[in-house]
Image (cartoon, rainbow, N blue to C red; front, side):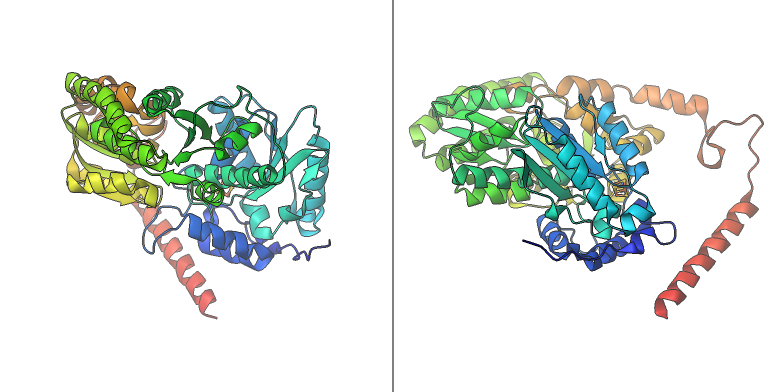
Length: 510
Ligand code: SF4
């Protein structure tokens, strides 16, 4: 069937083009006029940004498309191709390999001519045909970045299957998907949707390790590798087993994930994936087994969702909770800590820190508020913690300034700001997410790294004393002579910028 194709929107090529620098509104307007309203509306519902909140006039964190790209690159027998501006693809490829991708990133380049004439879409079609080799791949994923999305490149018109290889085309623009965390959900949800359709229409491949003889609980979220095993241990006395973690590492795991007794939304931002599990009739259990209270509530909720008797749930609690309590008491954390990040597990980390004895006045997450972090929100708020969903960099840094913590856990710019203020700081992604958080294994895992970092305060003060204001502000960079400040240059630039803004405003009113 021929589907109507909107003409390519050339706004993407006007001026200095569209990109992170353009601002969300212009990008959204271009994409809407190019026929992408439906997908953008769905993203706005799935990944909401409340009025007046939110960070994501890019670039404030990494390009969101990295989330989808990473999910594709981590799957066996999956080819992942990007369609976007060369600079975006360069950054995404660099980041992928920095984080240890073992596969190549495919790329369909374009120029203004191939975009305007629609040749880019033909090039994409040719690329997926070339890649769709069933001996090598189950799936080819093609990701539209900002400019092709804003221009309306119609990936939905690609064939769904070529030579038995599934073709999954998704739009992941920075102006529609606020964080790279949520971009993981865009691809995971798209894959679950296809897999659910396949499972509903006939027999599908068995999991590589065979089908579990116990009812399983599928896990939502990319966790530290030991965490799914620890969760499996917690489920065992309930007569349950851990199912696959979504995003999965292989296509056939998607069927096993759908074939579960319940889903544990360990990371709370997988809205599209939850939609697919719900359509398959699966119950979704919020929060995660972190610390004593978190594990207690989670065992109860999972047991209920899977129709496990109360006596068996209590037996599991009696087995694990005293151990967790003992480990927490043996590995105390004393000090004030602010937590911020974009991974979605910030509230869980804060719970663990508080149960370890830390004073946590602020938790900021770039992810949105969803029902699946509601128990964590409630627990934290009951202890006086300020929880900021869709936190901006400015809010995170303001919290560090206000609370003057002994340690700031955060994203790269938050850590940088804290260290400049002689406050010890740890990167959330590299140093906190790289440790187990769940059950007994998670209970003591943060103490050493956190206590060591907090003990470094004196070193930061020494450095501050030694370097003074060298390299600060206008004096940053490499200088051969003593830097000369030029306030008159700054005043001139400011004058020019104000003039330009006024001119733009006047143009808008015409
Ligand atoms: S694809 Fe990513 S890097 Fe490129 S313009 Fe969009 S948000 Fe920026």
